[in-house]
Each structure stands twice: as C-alpha cells, then as structure tokens.
Length: 257
Image 1 (tube, rainbow, N blue to C red):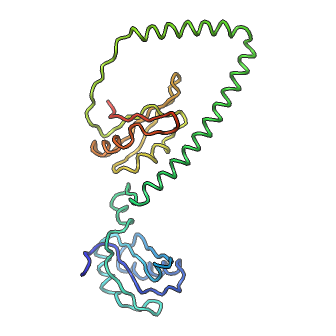
Image 2 (image 1 turned 90 degrees about the vertical axis):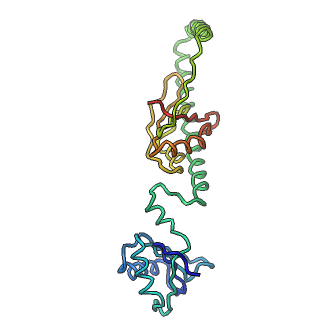
Image 3 (image 1 turned 60 degrees about the vertical axis):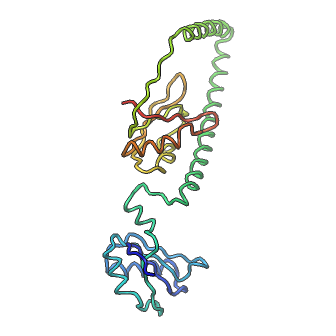
C-alpha cells in the first residue's frame, strides 16, 4: 500500500559503512538539486543502519527527488525511497515554530524545570544567608534599641491585624477568557526564562513579562501572552497552582487589562 505524499522522504538500503557525517553531507548535496532541504536525519543505531530521512521544505521537491532517485546507486547500493509515514518533526517545526516533539516534551521540560528549581534553591539560600548576616550586624549595632523597635513593631502588627479584620471583603469578579494570563505568587528569583520553559510547551505561546518583586511579599507577578484565548485557557488549566518551588504555588488567571 502506497503512503500518502508528504515533504519527508524515507530512504533505505544505504551503505552503513559510510560515516554518519559524510552520509548526511552527501545526501544533502544529492537531494538539494531537487528543492530546498530543511533537515537530513541519518542515524547509526543497530536497528537504524542504512536508513535516513530527507526533509524538504515543500512536497514538490520531495516528489521530484523520489521519482528521480529511487533505485539510483549511492555508495554502490541502490537506494529505496518512499514517502515517510508521518511528517517529520522538522516539517512540523517549520509549520509551527512552537512545536515540541510529544514524546520528548514532558521529559525535556521536567529536566529543565529540575535544573531551574536547583538554581532557584541555590539563589534563595545565598539570599537568605546574606540577609541573616545583615540582620545580625544590624542587631549588634542597635543593641538595646531593638527591644523598643520590637515592641513598636508588635503594636503596629496588632493595629494592622485589627484593621484587616474590620475591612470589608472584596467581591470577586469573574474574568472573561483572554489571550493574556496573569501569574501571581512567583518567587523573587523567577526569571522570564523559567516561565518560558513552563508556558512554551503549549501552542500559541508568544512571551512573558515579569514585574519587579513586591517589597512586602517578596513575590513577583507576570503576564504571559498567547495567540488566542483558547490557547491561553489550555495553559491556565494545566499550570494553575503549579509548584515553582517548595512552598510557592503559582496562581494563574486571565489578565484583566
């Protein structure tokens, strides 16, 4: 049964003695005379010897190469060429720059997130140590005055708590779906790169914009933009309450702009 045409060609019966780098270069030189090539994949694993994929930018180039080169001698062996069963990842990336291979998507992002979490932990540890040293020096300099400050601070906190208890609750307003998401409760060490790792795995991702840390809560907020509200909704449902680091669960909602 013949396979449906697509821009990726599957080539068998290649000479498996040829080194991978040389094989890719020669395949590119041979097939590029029939159209623009965006990738050549040649692997040397035990089950993949003598095989390669040539990815054209368009179907016309792939079809022309298949008709002209199928059965031609290449390193003393006749090539067997047919359309690939499915479009290659290179083709899908060409069609959608945000495409991530489904089998690799979760594993790749899990590794990246783990590395980022370790980096955040180290940064937070250094920040805490630096803050503790500054606090110790300040207390030594202030001496007994700290006791007075503590009393004042306690009174201030009491007043704040009392005021907070008497303040009327703010009613929540349901927000309509939007292509822009609001991320809250982000640690101060979070960067745009950290957020991009999380949100770019969902189609339509455009970018992120972080705010400066809030002096009171030491947390950041960010806006994440998608092409459409539907795409943003998928990301919202997947990442709302995602744990950025221990004790920090990100809150994701539609941005009210």
